[in-house]
Length: 457
Image (cartoon, rainbow, N blue to C red; front, side):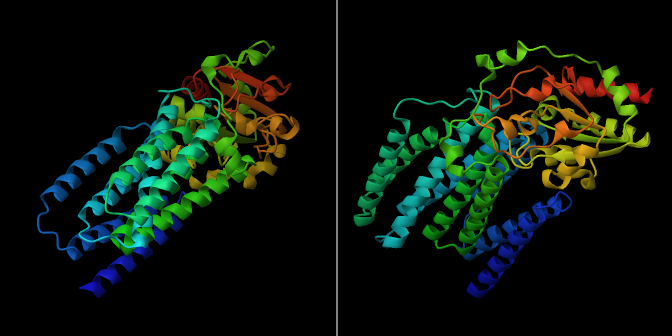
């Protein structure tokens, strides 16, 4: 039976790896999800049989309730709320690792070995930080608390003291692991640490935070796997942890910032604080959907740049309808996707895939940036920081050095936006006031619907 278990775990691991590989492309992402799900099903089934579970009552009840919640959430949660949902999932993953590791400690009949004690403390630390940190990220994304950085004096010093307290408690537990008091204190302090680590991170850095917390949840699962001596949990947790770190690094590269700078740079903007006043005082020419249609109908090529405003307005379906109308008119249409557009990695890809936008129309920044200079119209829907020229020229800007989409190089730029408010980084966008820029103000879905209706003629 032991050999069969190991073979099953190996098959599960292969499914996870192939699933991750397929998730790297929008064309194969669904297959990757299915393959990874099959791998997890095999792992769970084999683990239950291997541990000779006699009473499956609570397990079946948990599966039924959990599956029902997951199915309802998948159907009901809007695409614009998907980042919040991912944050919650990360939190639940970390919380589950904490609870399982703690429960396993209370099941020990003998004193755990040193390596088990160390991984147990690490599991509780990482899992709890992930749990509370993820729900702070959820609150920021959901608007339950301001997205701007929340800071106070000696904040980093307090964080260091909390971490040192956890280290001391961990050492005490490893030396004398008979009592669980140290573990309870580790959980309590880690919960506070998770809150304090995320509140100073602003909305502009949420894509990196989401990826990083996902990595944390994987690492917590891997540590719990060592506690349980469960190989598949170690493998799957390590895969999630590694992929999350890689994705976090890619997001940092896309913003030309280090991970340390993201965690401690305090970049963010609170729109309710009136950060857009500077932009509102400038003069800008307002255009109508009719003006936009005149430019689009005569364009031989159009590049559409989606942003978070598109997700908020849920305009992806009507945008695809508009793009199809342009293509019927003989216009070449592509979508330019910035790595950190939206509120989580891949947000725009998922959003547009939901509207059945052909995968070959979705172009990554590096693949399409040179095309803007030969493009008749760049149509921006709700994007801001990822097209802000300040990233190239303004050295005192938090955006400086960040690779951006070369929207300003197109012959005509049409920007659909509710107002002149800055993006999450709080940097005013000079592109709004350019001579070849047409600002069309209003809800993205309404504006694009009007354009589509006018194109129908």
